[in-house]
Length: 378
Image (cartoon, rainbow, N blue to C red; front, side, top):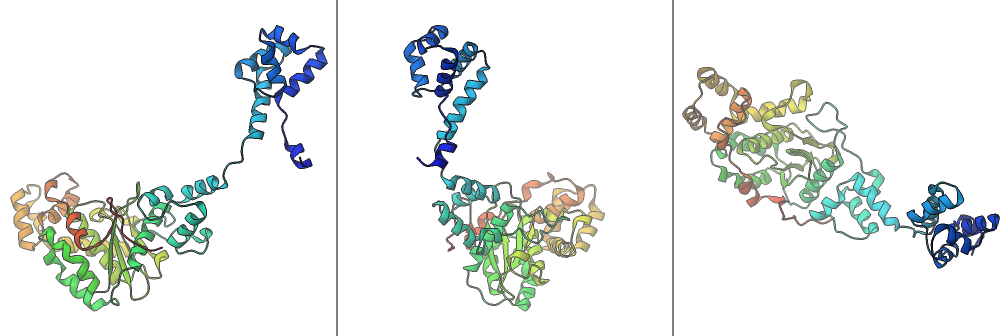
């Protein structure tokens, strides 16, 4: 045994008992008599073959006129000194799980459940970093006055969108084609099944469109960023699976693309959270968000049409009025309802018209989540 190990070893509590017996002139048989215990039990403790139980610690405390904690602490110190050194990977896994939603990322198929070294390598590749210390939170997140609030979970969702988008073939972005599509997009808002054409039409404009289910406790509606100067990406979560929210978020993100927002790679991404029908206080909006919200709201229901209808019909707006108005402006009634609910601050009013649309969106999209992970290379 080395000198270093001798200095760090903690003796068994039996050695302290043996020393105390010698100091008092007692034998082990004497101590057994005092404790009312078998002599063999005392011998097992003194020889270091048995530990001191809480009951025995109390008994020894009375016998030697010291606190029971004295013997309990001797036993605890001995056990801790002889406990096996834990696997170093435990602390490293804890560090990763504290920083990122690693377990959930493994469950979703974004990472493989491997040994800690390979897991760290996967994370570096996932976040496009040469070292884990290089992974930073995004520079800003839209719809927030404090741009340092992007969470690690939001960051993981964003990089999953980037990972899937990077594997998608697409032509170079054409602003001309996108403006033509936006001008014609309203005719696809009447029938929810028409949503299946959206990913292909966006791809023809050079936009990579990805749908990724959010991670737990992560409220993200959409994101806009650019892989490079000619490769914009729109990611959506369809967290609020409703026709009005889908069209608002999509048009919102398209406005970001048209304005060149989110350029500079994934670290410059515009993450949009809780932008349901643009319900964001004016003071909390950046100029980018204000323009995107205005464009999305006007697309869902043209502002002059909405104001005219509201002025004429409020407060006695009937279901028949809404259906007729939606037919006249060529929008699905659920989109009109979404805008009127916000205007009246009545979010349960005619809510049945705000139909679910995810089932139509995912049929022709690159999709990750809802029990079906997308295939991607790290």
